[in-house]
Image 1 (tube, rainbow, N blue to C red):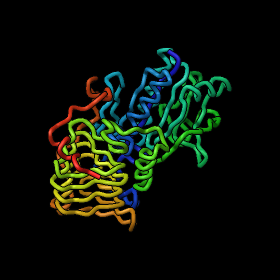
Image 2 (image 1 turned 135 degrees about the horizontal axis):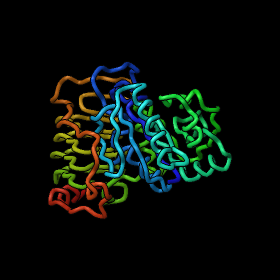
Image 3 (image 1 turned 90 degrees about the vertical axis):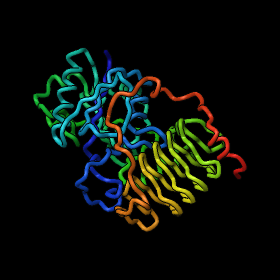
Image 4 (image 1 turned 180 degrees about the vertical axis):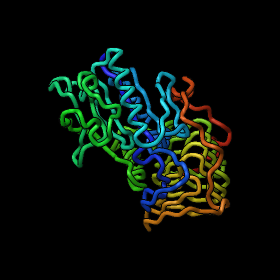
Length: 348
């Protein structure tokens, strides 16, 4: 086995509500890691795993800080649940040593929060050609929490914890691998919106899930817009999302999985994250909403809305579990419902 990958999630931004992206204040309630939030139908974690697969990395393990992340993974990804902080890195160290014992030459280790488009195969070749014990990825701004660690270095380390921001204090200083592709650290709500807009504009490799029913309009499996609802490009309607009577979504808007937009509500240039319900007659623009948390990007204001008639979270979100193969594979097409056909008639 040439290389494996260990992905740590649940640390850097794991417990921060969407509102904390702007306010910077830690929330006490459990929240979803940014790496597991679906954006245009897929999470950063899913996209990163797919990129590792294309580089030929077959053995992939995810060290999760909690088991509540709403993210579906293919069944051959190993999921290891850990506590917060240092416990994640202790389990990561154990996993690295286990992989090396099974014959792995190099391990790609990352603390996942950022969305990074890089050629992992090229990074591994860079690491091998220079015979480095440790290589850290970096873009034009600063180093990323992505490393390649050699088997020899892992065997030589006596530490039981792969420390973040250095991986292991016993290892030699890291060589730098320059990432030339798209990087978005998704460190705040503005970054999240920029990622969505960049995907719509083709500035990154993310393609919305589902079927492009018209230029710039994607509708995913099970989505049901009312016949009087309108979808104006560019926009995305996620899996099992609902648009009620006379609702409108337009201009770089993404309505994610299991969301519902109330009758007469207009959503313009906003991100509605999974399992969120919007009430009737609202006018929402330049915002990020997740459950009862609302971030206004124009005013740089973050609020928790206590009135469920305005915005609210819906059903309990799924945990981090393996995904059935038929759900994991992207659909070639989507069965057209009567509501979808009628909802798209007569749009401009």
